[in-house]
Picture 1 (cartoon, rainbow, N blue to C red):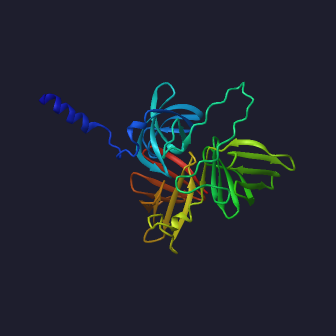
Picture 2: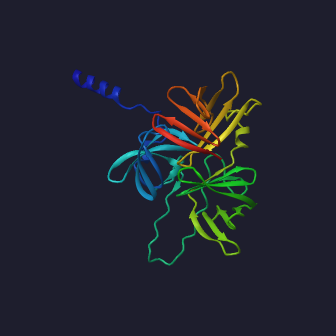
Length: 312
């Protein structure tokens, strides 16, 4: 009995330590699907990529981790041929509704069915109901459309790189209407039908992408509640970036002393990096994390590798 107790203590000591679970075990495991993206070795952007998934790939959601980012939780999943890893809840759907998972998976339609399924309205962002008047970012399986300032929008590919730029022409309760004069291309970001519609010239618009997620402008939220991102002072610059998985990176640059920044993937930007000498651009590091800022991009290096993020 004494030997068994010692073994239990040692086993407990060497188990990986994650934050307390926010998700009760009783709801898991349960089937789900991925909207695509990286699978990581741990619950967060700082962990290495161990695999990747495509839109509508089947997964088994094993459990929640309690690690939150942008309103959704990181989950341990089983995918492919029995591999396990972690994916963000904003990129998956589940068989049963769950608060920190983006949505319930739609039933797969039979190819012999001639009935057109009525699309579900876009699920609300965890922090604010999304509609045509307040939406600032729309995701699809191959990238996203992001408001870059004023009436300007950018189309980002799956690596977060800017592919095209658009001028916002109008909004209503359900949609945002964009136009690219250089190509005579019109887009409609239709949140009600969950489709991105495409048209050239005076041609009728046709579906281009299915919308997988949408996020409202959080600037009004950040002025409420007192616990949000601090408001910039005269010597502070607040920049929002979009990283390869379509995930937001918030950085506050402080022009004080030798210079430093605070960054975070969700909520308050609390991790501090001090500026050090760099041959080009501006380099900030704490020895574990580093951000190299150059123009409208940053290269962020974590224990999981390096990702290039682009200013929204």
